[in-house]
Image 1 (tube, rainbow, N blue to C red):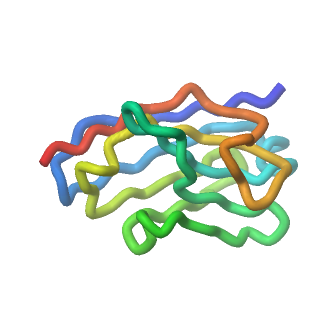
Image 2 (cartoon, helix red, strand yellow):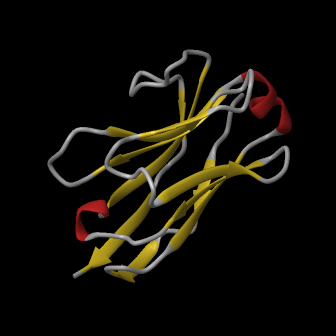
Length: 120
């Protein structure tokens, strides 16, 4: 059973920062590629960032490059550091796990999501 639990969302002013966390078991990180997606109101879910299990390489969506950073600090937590936040970053953010690479919205496992709201 793969369980992903996000935390760290909230309300922040434009230009501010937030850090999201995704807690999972060590076996999950050892088995799956891990990533972040987001879904804004009335929009489709979209890719944000992902970390490849086999070599630790990371990819980012163009819209967040230079502002967001994903990292794995230990065997059980994936982080998404979000800086210079913009109103268009407002969305529910999801952690995902998948054997496939690159990761897509067809990923196998999803967390419950955490709301990020950026006020302008």
